[in-house]
Length: 409
Image (cartoon, rainbow, N blue to C red; front, side, top):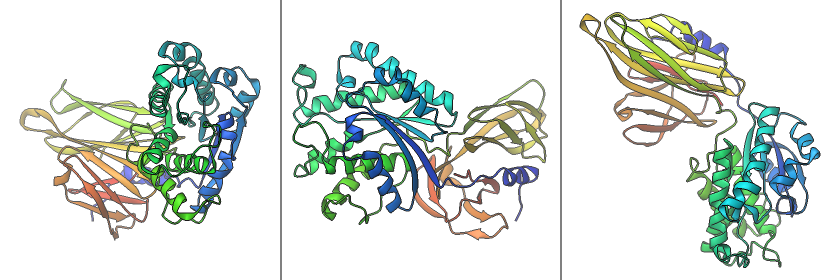
């Protein structure tokens, strides 16, 4: 089979390996401390065959402001290069009036996030979306029922995360799902606020699915002492709430932080193009112009002979790697036109999505680096996106004769 040229060598030599362990710091208060949520998360991950290194700082009643002004919190943040720092506010504060949150919560949540990013550029801040109290909070009409309070917590945690370039683990959303569908499961202890063992197991399940980006398998051996039926209801809720709305919760796997989107502008001279790579968390940018020529840098100019070409950009950095491709054509008299655009993203260790105009019309094949054909399992497809899985991450996808190296997690 025809193989890519020099850029193929560059791709292979820049490969990373799938991450085997997550390092997670929990910053919160009694909601995180109760029933040892971090430890429950570790044991659940171990039962799934994954490793987690955790630490925590959980002072009772602490707000975002208290943590932001506590030197010990910052010592914890700076202790190592965390993959995730999970931050939880005091249980009521994100549900308070908009302006109060803007002045008393949001600035300090953002300060904590800035400290995390300053310590490690590939770290992610993940906000712990907590739950409404069992009967709401009577001090204010807008939060005096569970559903009212839960909705305000959801909205403001999402707003805080958006302001901090962060993500959310939607424990409160899963909490509502269980209360609505399995009211016999008691998620609270007697105070109607703190979590029962069931509530903590639900929270740990949400964190696992949110941070590892994969579903918890049925009949998991570790149930934190709960009966199997109850544990399965809680796991199912976490899987559904998180995986059904990955984009809503702004979740990105640690090995997928590096992203690239390329643009092309024709003009200047016949067959001439100016290409630009808009990338994040990248320090090396390589171009394959599809005509046996390569380039490097954020902006590159290239001149083509008449014909149709796939231009591919690969970026690498400390947080991973990504590729993006665009098809251009140069006709008679050097008249140029953009034809289509393709992007490949890793969703999980063995799952990807291809996005592009009319991508469903492409003939898709997979090959390993020796050229051996691989079995490709299509999961779902639409006009502009196809999801698929392979048993190996070290492979090429062939789309109508054009080869793309799969981004490796």
